[in-house]
Length: 98
Length: 505
Ligand SMILES: [Zn+2]
Image (cartoon, rainbow over all chains, first blue to last red; front, side):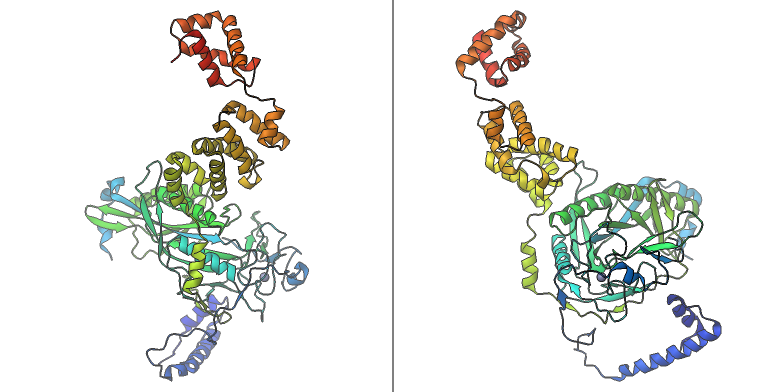
């Protein structure tokens, strides 16, 4: 399987991740992405019998659930300390439209 | 190029409403009535101080792990069963990736290919016959977490936006219909019917002001032009924040799409879905800014969460809790309590609490007709005037049943009954005490005879009219009689007067 990634794809992926890439950075990212995909491609070499059901996680256990009970939230001052900007009540972010 | 461009402007202009079919599908987000959020223990209470109901899980802090709220899962299954959906035995969680400031993790936990509820349906009809009864198919319903709330600077000076994450992680069930609705009226009926079911089975309060029920509509037109069938581009309308708004937005969009097609001839081929918002003030749909990049959510299974397996026994146990759904309940009320369709509708529309109240009152007084009149009039008027719910109504169903039993038994007439009800509410007393307080007692026959004689003596004109055959003239004496003795029963009084004047029967 070929994992050639062109500059356009790299720029698209960058945009989705809100990264502004120069053409040089995009080319470099394309190379890195291709090598990562090749690495993961090793999985394709494993022969999987046809009757094996798809498997979505790293464990076979199911149904980790909790009761519907309210636990104390973190106090606002502490949690807002993670924010680059806040007014003590709200997070403040650059203007968003729509 | 497609062939549709060959339709001339003149041919387009000539198209009449009869050649146009409206196609509507809905996506409804319902906030489930849980105490805590979908994947953490933060409260879901509405209207609290901003950012006081968050924790490392719902703000997406590294190293935090989500754990599923089993009540949210149960309410989703309950909804699915009420909507005749297949319930998935095996569901999993997927990440829907996008960037927005009110989505702190950079992804929403949702369900892509194994939604908890599969195909189902909801039957709708209109009591005024605006459309034929029909079945709207449900495509799926999946469980996901809500985002936070942004407020933007409206001054135009480009000030910063403010984010409140209290709502982030609140459980939402997204119900997606097939494009089965053919008019805005059908879409509105679907929403009303859905809301009633959801409130009956107590999965959501469906409060639209608080955003507990949010609705987006997908709409386009199929147009028949001289045997050629074309479709207009699909538009998704957001922000339809009331049923009335939904109906008006969809109605408006039908007209707008037809006018746009007549002008440009643009069809669905090669036209991406556009997003419009509904402006309730201006009463127009407005195109929202097109995203430069097509939506690319890069869904993948969430590695932090494991699958959920549901057994038949669990599903059956939830089914047991559903109770009678509104449509079935309406039929039962008509059949078993001889209510009119109209009365049954009014009652059922008030919700399960009022229906239960009626059933209890009707049982106590053994008079469904009297019970429905009093519940649909006296009780509902009070609830409307005080904007309160049935469980806040001062007279319990036992007390109301007792009062109506006395009316049924002829101890009280309805007018005096209403006086008794007022006294019961004013002084928080039962019917017996209110009757005592008002000095109501049965008027015996000698008392009645002397009262009648007094009335006849004082009203020679009425007596003359009656003797000329105008028996109805006696009605004028009821008011006078009540002034003299408020306990007198109008029916008994008139019967006695007729007897004394020899015009009985
Ligand atoms: Zn939380």
